[in-house]
Amino acid sequence: MFIPMYCSGCEKEREHEVVSDTRDRVVRCMTCGHVQRIKKEKTSGPVMVKAIVSREDSSMVCGIELMPDDECAIDDHLVAECGEEAFGVEVTGIECGERRVQRARAKAITSLWTRVIEQVIVKISVHDGRKTIPLYRECEGEDPFVVGDVYVVQGKRFKITQLKLRDGPLMRKEGWKTVAHRIKRVYGYRL
Image 1 (cartoon, rainbow, N blue to C red):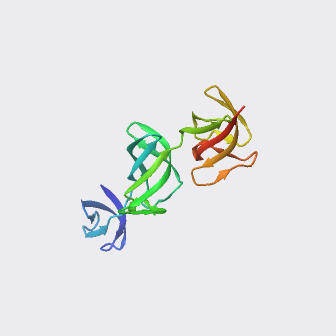
Image 2 (image 1 turned 30 degrees about the horizontal axis):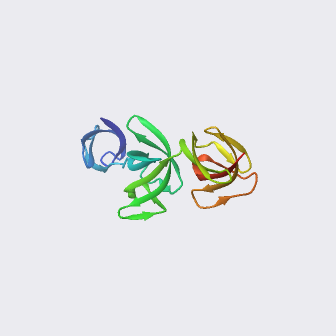
Image 3 (image 1 turned 135 degrees about the horizontal axis):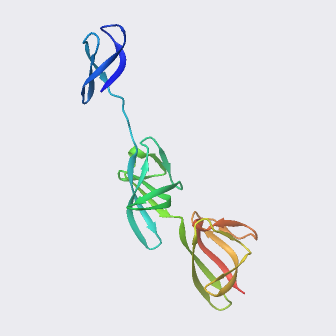
């Protein structure tokens, strides 16, 4: 392999032959034969970060490809590779050694805890006056749910009264909306 570079023997830019390409690169000038060592450029490619991907009632160990200096934070949306499959995931926890942190660079991360957000199961509690009926609806993670709207799930028609979000708040005002992957539970009354 030949590379053009400055030769300290010729004191000009000359073609050099790579003699050794180990820790340091050893090159020889093709004109005067002068041999010198040069530092190799660090080529840091992407790293595969271990990711535990939760999908409702099961979990699997996958990988997420990140550049070493990329910063990852809780609530980031990434793509996890699990063998031949790939899933859109949301980061729910970051481990750096024995500690849990809110954000970290990829090279410091031991593992990421994530959950699938492409296809989710929304839990619904419908009250009909005397009892509460639990319902489940599988939907896309970006499907909207609106307080005050009427839905039909498993043959039961109901109006949404509240949306409980995963990050804490309870949405009660008519017209407030969110997407399915942010919902912990939907509350409503039967029509």
